[in-house]
Image (cartoon, rainbow, N blue to C red; front, side, top):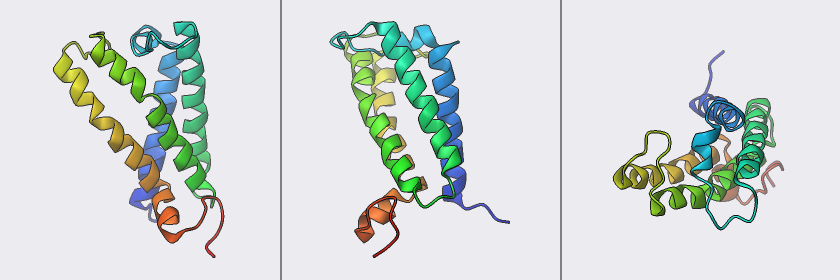
Length: 143
């Protein structure tokens, strides 16, 4: 049996989200606190814990739905997650917060360019882009 590059990319993304979600709840919790924008009206630790749970759920969904027709919905949810955390990455840059070895504004800025890559990765690996181009709603078979 041959594994397609898309399926492999989806599994790798799911595994990465399981790793980062676990980090939110355990070993990297302090680092993730640096990414919570000050304007978020919740306790910083609560935001880190909740976002970790969401990352774990999305990671599991990517691994479970990798061969299912509804995987494009999971891809859209994953892309939305990456868009939702972008303000935290921007806040880390604009407030000059060190975390994850990003201790210069240049490093924090360069990291921002990776966020669109993650969005495209989620959409491409789950075939959400293909379904959108065909005019098929994700989770439904072609017309």
